[in-house]
Length: 183
Image 1 (cartoon, rainbow, N blue to C red):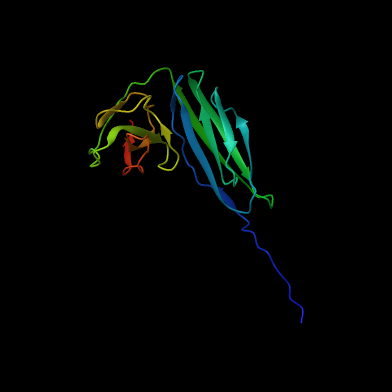
Image 2 (cartoon, rainbow, N blue to C red):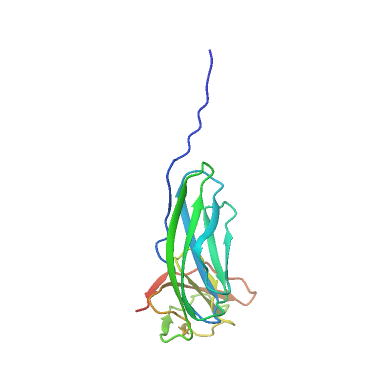
């Protein structure tokens, strides 16, 4: 009896990220571009245009996404196309437009319920572009259950979560996620 093994690879791939958040000059930027289908490893590249000045692209360890991160160094409108190439040679492309504003002109006011633990000394506030990737935005522990984020860009959506920090420096799980869309 002869057995044969067949391996399959989904032929088509697609980039799942349709838009990227805008940014603010000299304020940390974070966005993820994700792909599905095909086979790993994926190769990523900017195939036209250029990323915002000060932003770099780094692929994830499993290559199914790339993170765009850095500190924008020039206010401008950037148009670019990112492509992902699966191990079988199939390619997906997505085009993006990101505006880096010279300054923010909106503020998101956040409020949350205090922790019920007696040994909490403060809170950390996290912001992300998709509810999966996070960056701490408070420079030091917030003593109250309110925080104002004045570094949001126009026409962008942000996700927020808070954590409680105890006297030993241990941090809780993230709170429920709040979403804010900036006009």
